[in-house]
Length: 195
Image 1 (tube, one colour):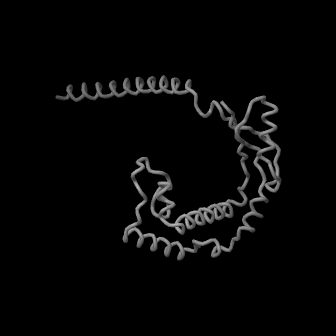
Image 2: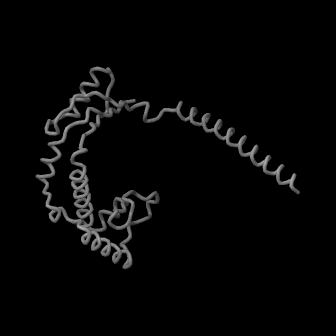
Image 3: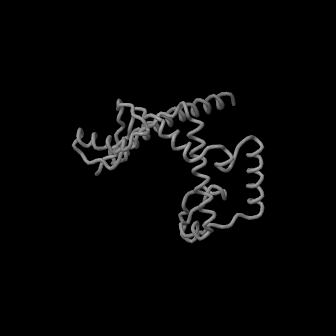
């Protein structure tokens, strides 16, 4: 029986080793096949070394798009500038959260008809924020338990020092806009070309 165990272990080792090698070869072949197809990376370009500019400069993305079109000689759909907000990460995150809360509150204040017609599930109701694949699925009103848990979440959030509404956090839209205009570009941009 000892030889049976040794033979089984040798077979299992060899089978696993050969299986891993075959699997690797198949994956490399599949990757190369997929890489030969047209993907987003065939139309997008990451540009480095752009001059650092202030967020207050109007039309930074449009000027960069025009510059790249001139230099490349191809039509560009759009340009997305990378912004350096490392020093103000918390302020930018707070501004984004406030903006998202305002959007969710506006949607909820307009009633369920807005959400149902768009087929959206806002994150405040426990949804992903996306659109369901089945058009017959309508946004359902959260049940009692879900509403109670949302209230508990909000209470806990307030206890640890958070503030749900933008007014309670002390930031106004003017302050946020001033802070965002004070940011600088990172010298990096992404350009998307036409087909």
